[in-house]
Structures are given as C-alpha cells and as structure tokens.
Amino acid sequence: MRLDRRHFLRLSALGGGALALGPGFWRDAYAAPAQPGPGPYGAMSGTADANGVRLPAGFASRIVARSGNKVASTGYTWHPAPDGGACFATGEGGWVYVSNSEMSSGGASALRFEGGGAVVGAYRILSSTRTNCAGGPTPWGTWLSCEEYSGGRVWECNPLSASQGTVRPALGTFAHEAVAVDPVDRRLYLTEDSTSGRFYRFTPSAWPSLGTGTLAVAKVTGDPLTGATVSWVTVSASQPASQQSNASQSTVFNGGEGCWYDSGCVYFTTKGDNRVWAYTPATSRLELIYDDNLYPSSPLTGVDNVTVSRSGDLYVAEDGGNLELCIITPDRVVASFLRLVGHSASEITGPAFSPDGKRLYFSSQRGTTGASGGGITFEVTGPFR
Image (cartoon, rainbow, N blue to C red; front, side, top):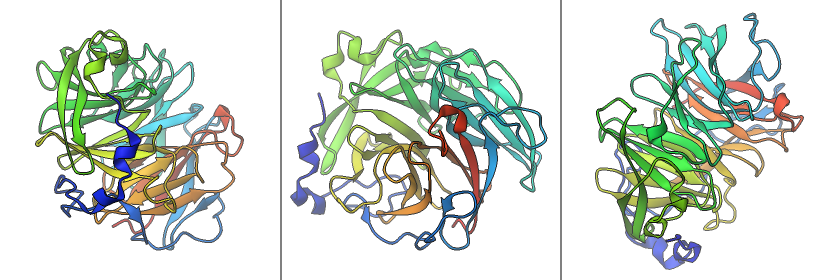
C-alpha cells in the first residue's frame, strides 16, 4: 500500500478538515499544511559570518568540533561524517551533545560542556558498529544509535561516559534512520531509510527495558490531508518489513528520515517525497503537515533530521537544497532559519537544543570539502523563543 502522491496534491483538500494534533505543536485545528511565510526571527543576514553561517539578527555561531581534529584541549579526535545528535543534561549544570558517525566504521562520540558553554570533554560512546546515521534520546537518559543498512540494528548508549553500548535487536533489523520515544504511550517509533521503507512501532514487554517487545509497522487508511488513521501490523524483528510475508498489509513510506516526539505527537520526515508527517498515538491519526510540491516557492527541500524547540517550533534540516535549517511554526508557516555557505556537497545533520533551549547544535556532515573527513559541528546561540 503505497501512499500515492496525487492524493496529497488536490488543492480542494487544502481547505478541508485537517487533523488537530498535540497541544505542544499544532494549536490550530482544520489548518492546511505549512506554507511559506515570514519566520519568527526575521530574515537571515545577507552574508555569512566568519564560520560560513547566515543567521537572523541577534544570533551567532561558533565551531565546536571538526572531523579529524582534536576537540578543544581534550586530546580527543572528532569523528568523520557527523550525523544524528541529541543533548543530555549532566546534572552539574552542564550538558552533553552526542553525535553519530555515518561511516563504515560507525559509532558515536560526545562533547561535554560546562554550565557556561565551554567544552570540557570529548569521548567515544559507541564503537565497532556500522553506518550510524540518526537515532534518538530516551526519557531515561540514554542515546539510541541507529545503523543505516539492511542488516542495521539499534544500540543503546550511555552519553555521559565512554562505553561500548548495548545492541537492542528487538527494535528490528533494517536500514534504521531515527527513533522517537513516547513516554506517555510507552512506545518507540522508528523510521526506515529505504524506498520501500515502513514506519515502525516498538512496544516493550516491560517498560522501559528494550530487551524484548513487539515490533509492528503502520497501515494507513484514508487521506492524511482530510483524515487518516493508522493501524499496526506485527512483524518480525529479524529482517526488514518489506521482505516479510505480510508486507502487502502495511504502507510504504519513501525514505524515512528524522523522527521526534513532542507533546503527544510523533513527527517524522520522508525524503523520497519531501514530506513532513505528524502521528498522534492517542487518536491513531496521521496528518501530512508539509509537502514541498504543494508550494513551489517553499524554502524547505531535501527534508532530513528534525527536532522541536521549547516554543513548539519544528526545525527541519536539509540534505540538499541550499543547505538550510528551516523552521515550521505552530501556526503552520515554513521559513528559513539559517543557511550554510560553501557547503554545497554536504548536508545538515543532528540538530538538537541544549537542555535549557538556549543553544542549538548541528553539523555539516562533509563541510566545505565534500569529504567525510571534512565534517564540522556548530553551536548557535541567540534569542530563541
């Protein structure tokens, strides 16, 4: 069951009954998908700063790590091809930013910051894995690092200390991209980066242990512009859902990418059709909240990693396009927030806010060189609402 693009392009549907979602994000019921408009921070600067970043007035950037270089005075060499990331509080007023490495050697590293923002540590939290793309944080303070290849699995890591990580095979064997944890419904949601990908749900046997549980994939009924519902088809964790005997019973999502939970909703992106989705577990409702083909003038293309700010704004990173990090506001406006200049052969990865919401981290996976060894990890500060 493949979601046919033409169903989403019926302009007559745009004025119809779109779904009311979680209170933390879509506050307006019966609204159309996000369309271009002015962002809450105004236009980006006309020229890039010294770090090659165009930002709105009042914001500033700094580089906190470069692939192949020592991190600050730590002596630790930052990994190549930085990808998905998240922040964790240390309990000492500081925080840690975790970043995957999308290389054949895989793994993940962490940057430790003290309360004033200085980098005071860097270390490896996962080794001996492969093609670690995105992942997601858990409410109990661990990082779930996802392997992106057909035999890929999920590894649970302690972000606060150097560690090997623990494989979680019950979360499936497929080309994992990202994972989001719903602490209310006590389930995990996972995306698959494949043209025949599915949207997965994992229900632990004993929350919050991820050792055993039930894996299922979404079956969508109805049109996500006018009212779609999701039911779940149980699958084996041993191989991709597309290769299983009941594959025809589930819905194909073309190239699943970022996935993030916030205030009762699970947001995820699909790069094959440049869409952003919202699933509400409490109602089993699915809504298409952005499709770049609906508004040709939209700044957001090449949708990839996502995160949500404290104000409920959804930040979507671009893999392609003009290398922007775009924002979709709760009143359904999509606008550019920042742009990297001179990074045309790269992609923006790993957007994540510090625990206090005042600092935004992200990486240019291949930097200005276009090579995996040229990755750059940034921090942006400013008047985030």
